[in-house]
Amino acid sequence: MNVFVTGAAGFIGGSIATALVKAGHQVTGLVRSTGQEQQMLALGITPVIGTLNDSALLAAQARQADAVINAASSDHRGGVEALLDALRGSGKVFLHTSGSSIVGDASGGKASDIIYDEGQLPEPTVDKAARVAIDNLILAAAQDNVRSAVICNTLIYGHSLGVNRDSVQLPRLLKQARKSGVVRHVGTGQNIWSNVHIEDVVALYLLALAKTPAGTFYFVESGEAAFADMSNAIAQALDLGQAHDWPLADAEAEWGYEMANYGLGSNSRVRGKNARELLGWAPKRNSVVQWIKDEML
Image (spheres, one colour):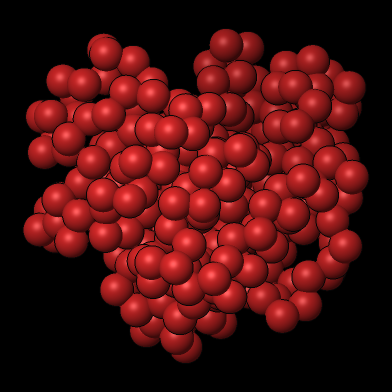
């Protein structure tokens, strides 16, 4: 299969693209710069230079491909619209990467006992309404003969299979700890995130590419952990004692509003049945804390 992957030099997109090549697919990858071309070629990926702002380029690649995977951005509506316009009526697969901060509560590190499933999603916060609208646009494309699916990842851990080694959330904690000598979490760190290993994420994308029903939403999770437990595991791995509480204002100054409030300071507890029941997905890794202790560094 000829698959067009956006974000092919990123953590998620690069892992997917690399796995597709290993599985025997022909992969064209969207990258932003000429400096990334050789990296793609070394992985067996045909590079195309551009961004999600290049609507004509996206449309042309989507028409040429047998399937499209958007892993460049969960929030770029223009890029999604360009891809969908090109795919309408084709019956081709379109997998869009979203993230479970869409159910994030921006709790400032406080715990929550609320767990969401794929058939019961809350009204989005003002901060996440635009992302949810994009997800809904993609699901609705099933009515236009696009085999579309939203793959809503939780906190991803593990090292990339592609060129960009690190994920988004936990490496922020590690970088701050190495800079300051103190591991910190937002507030008391009692907030909980569902999580999943990158190798299991990639396995789900490959299954969805082959088998997804049109218009399906997938939560991707194989466990959950409180940030206090994850930050203390980082502290143990670095031999830095115990992790410290951090006021939200200080966390925002270090990580920015979005990351402090949602990526690191919210609860995002979800359960995903669709991948298991519709695709036969069986994740192999389920302990982010153990991975931090044994493999993160």
